[in-house]
Each structure stands twice: as C-alpha cells, then as structure tokens.
Image 1 (cartoon, rainbow, N blue to C red):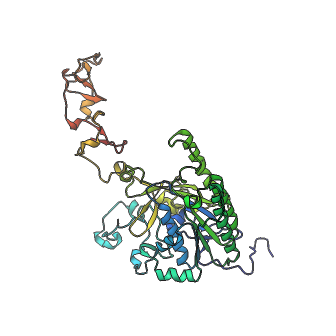
Image 2 (cartoon, one colour):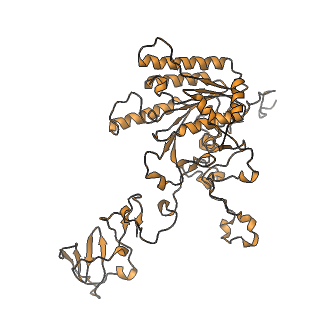
Image 3 (cartoon, rainbow, N blue to C red):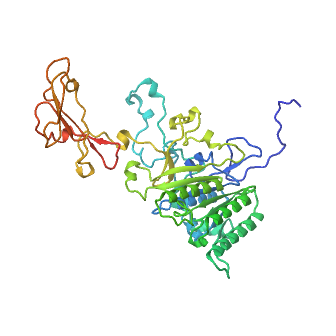
Length: 486
C-alpha cells in the first residue's frame, strides 16, 4: 500500500443521537453536544464536547441568568432524545420551566443574521423592490447586512413562549429519561464542614452509580444547580474545587457533559472570604477565585447583568448584560478550536467572518433576552457614542448637565484668525489680570473675538463679564462622560 493513502478503520461507531462531529479533526473523533443557544455554541466552537464540564458565573445579585442557561441545556437534551440529570434543590422546577419547540413557526421566520427580536418587523426585502430599489455605490451593492449575532441553527428553535408539556415530563420521568438527585444530608453529621462534604460525596456516589449503568450510545446531560449555596451545606472553597475535579474525572471518558451553575455570591468571591468588600485585598481574592474556577473546568463564561448598575442599560441598549469568556474547551487540542471557527469571538482569520470582525481581534460580547429567545451578540455602540440620533439642540432636562464645567465652542475661520491687537484674560467678576503683546504683523485689531476655557474668558472689547447664553457653551453629560452637549 502506498504511504500517501489514508488508512481508516473498516467500521466506525455512529455518533450519539443529538451530537455533531467537531469541526477540527481529532483521533479519536470528538462529538459536540449543543447547549441549546446557537450563539453560545459558536463561542464554544460548535457545542460542548462530550466528557467536558463547563461553568456559568452570574455575579448579578438581582437576576438569575444561570437558570435560563440551565433550562436551555436541559430542554435541548430532551428534544434530541438524550437523558437528563438535575442535581440540586427543587430540580423539578427547573425542568417544568424549560422552553420547548415552536412547531407552528413558519419557514419565513427562520431567517439568519442578527438575533434581535422584532427589529426587522415590517421591513421589506430590498432585493424584492425591483426598479424601486434604492441606488447605492456599486462597491457596496453586493455587501451583506451587518450582523451582530448568529442564526437560529438547523436543529429547531427553542421558543421561550412555549413550555414543555406536563405530559411529556411525566412520560420522560416514568421512562427514567429525566432524573433528579436531591440534596438530602445524611444523619448523624456534626459540623458544617462535615455536612457540606457529606452531601457532596453522596451526590458523587449517585452520579458514579448512574454512569456505571449508562449506555454510551446515548448522551447524558448533567446539570448542577447553584453549587455551594446554603442547600449544599455552605462548603469551603477547597471542597467546591474538590467536588468539581472529582466530577470532571468521572465524565472524562463517557458520553456525558456537565453544566455547573454558581450562585451570585460565589460568582464574585470565595465562600470563606471575610474581607471587607471593595478593598484591594478582597478584589485580589476575587480575581484569584475566579481564576481557580475557570481552570477547574473545561469552559467557563460569566454573565454579568446590569441589575447592579442602573446606568448601564441605556448605554448598552438593547443588551441586558455583558458576557466574559474565562476559558474555552481544548479537548484533543492545544489551543481552543473556537479561535479558528467562532464568528462572535472575532479571532478567526477566515474571510467568511469578516462581517463580524473576523481576524480583527477579540470582540466584546453581550447578551439579551428577547421575547422568544436568549442570544449572545457582539457589542457595538451607535453613532454619537450610543445615541440613536444626532443631537442638534440642547437637552431640555438640564439636571443631567454639569453647570460648572464649560468647554470652548467651535469657532468659525474668520474668528480664529488672530491678527493683531491686545487680548485681555479675565474671569467673571474680575478686572483684566494680564495682557498679551500685540502681533508683530501690526494688522487690524480683533474686537469681538472671545472664547471660554474652563470659566476663563478672553475679551478684546471690554472687561465686563457677559453671559452669551447656552448657544456658546459645551457641557458634559453625566450619564455618558465621553459625550458633549452643544
């Protein structure tokens, strides 16, 4: 046999139901389980590899974005005929609130492009206008529409307006397709530390027993809800990391993937941190804790909602928060395949992703919850730093403006041509304090030329302070410090 002929096995095992082969070739083959959110699958390079553990951090105290990700993860597995396991308190409530397929969705509504809800409603297709089509430059005629998200995918869209039927849940529970592991503490346990680890060891034993009887031809999706909260016995940071490493070793060689959702307090700082919040020592401890969590799992993302800061929603409208990627799956690879295949990350050098910033560096990512779906998009500010339209008049509500900060207004060319004469520098309520020698050219004077710089007035006609009204002033907006109001 020639040496250049590729040698393949006579027969290969079929991939598990509901999975797709990885975009990057690897030996042995790597299969990906979709998360239920197409834009999140793009960030992970097509989905979550089997045998991986990924984590969601939600540091916002006023929202619980991890729960909607848990429901997407669980619902996607049930739709694809995969088994599910929810670990945590009230796991039944998570499954009952899962979204479901929208079977009545028409083909015309399954359009690719931006994942924004309703922003294209009522707009006609430009290509269908015929002769009435607006004329633009020929170099822009064939360009695609600018996109901030990923299309809906080809596996059926999960609709937030649809809830999984109760009859379907009962049938799956009866067939043991969907299971639960409650957090029942053992008896005769003294001490909070012993109680926490006893609960964790009991959960690990039940998961290991389930994996021994599990058939690898079917994918098992495990959801760990609010790891480390009070229902887990308030474990220490060492016990949490020990639990994650033990769970990761169990599913490494099995057709199973695990989603670990952290509560809000543990998404910001370690559980044993007693330092004063806001101090430098506390911030350093929080950064180290997040780094430890990111390295203990195969992939880690952070959903930082705007619930803690009400000034951010107007700036990043229509997003509901920012997404930070702490780690990406690298199974069978040295570098994450997402660097090459993801469109949202913006690290690919492929020309197909140039419309979303491909090859230009890492993009800023945000998320939004629409009427029908949850999506991840790239963050782009509009004109004038995020304003929807260019402002040409003063803001009616002057309470948002700074009354004490003034900036020089733009002057015309004939006013800026200083020729000759004496210029006095004055401040309101004071006499001229210094003089500037006239220009050596000795030409006409500059009467009427004036400007303001931080309250200092330049006057050539008189020394009486005057107020020119709001037209000659530029004020800084409080809500957006990089904008100026003319």
